[in-house]
Image 1 (cartoon, rainbow, N blue to C red):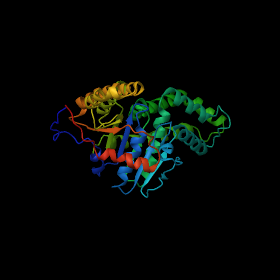
Image 2 (cartoon, rainbow, N blue to C red):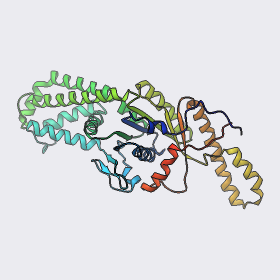
Image 3 (cartoon, rainbow, N blue to C red):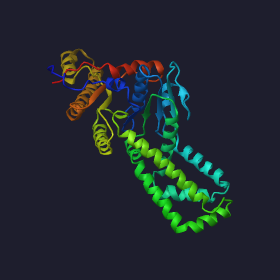
Image 4 (cartoon, one colour):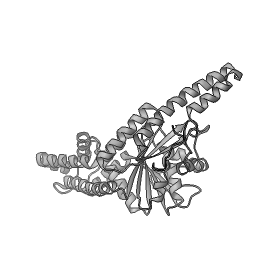
Length: 361
């Protein structure tokens, strides 16, 4: 192995995010099971060392922030034990839709006691006609809430790649939703008005106007947020992967999609790396020189480890070939224990800003 001149390459750490004080939104995303939540928590901890108030938000339906920090985290910002300026919250799209529906029922004077109430029927028609509208409106509610909170920077622990890419398409979804509502209003306005009155609705057309108004309000929030997402001074996206084919492939897809949406992305975190400070050739040389002295079981164990290490080095090399010139690629070590609890997360987070000294051929 030979040392090489890496002075012109981006530093293999996330210091660039920590140092960019203008950042307000940091998204952390990637394939399922690659360590997005751990990376989000670690990044939040590092940001808390230089920012006044930091919030970590989980938008993944399968929330893990509570498990990572070993404390109960709810729908409202929850202070993290051991920090004075770090909070976390977990959101649920279904709850947000139910609350929105309830507020509309209260405003129009209808009730949801009957499953076929006017509001229920209209909302069911809307959500079945426009897949993803419930998540889009939920996301808008979240962004309104987050914008009203006084936080310097928000770290989003996102759902797996497919859900995250759909999140980025919410403005288009809402445009379709508005068109659908207008179509329903034009074609079936009379019937909906009669149904509204039949089920205790308010003035004629009030239900449609209420939903249309809410959608317009939601679209305005989403479009405003969308503009901020496309501003590299305000928003960046951290891609997380592991050194395996499917994960690297998914990361390439994610990077390309982010580029299409105009969202800045110049950091990749590679988790679960075996001995990131060493390479397979070094380890294999050691194993060959000591193999005769090892018991058969130990030889088999070391053989499997070497096969895994060679595979990882192959995909890590591909990752640097693809992104090394433009991205900060951070290698996070595979540990002997789970990274859970504030102290372990604090210690592990240091790997994000103190890069491993690599030798690359």
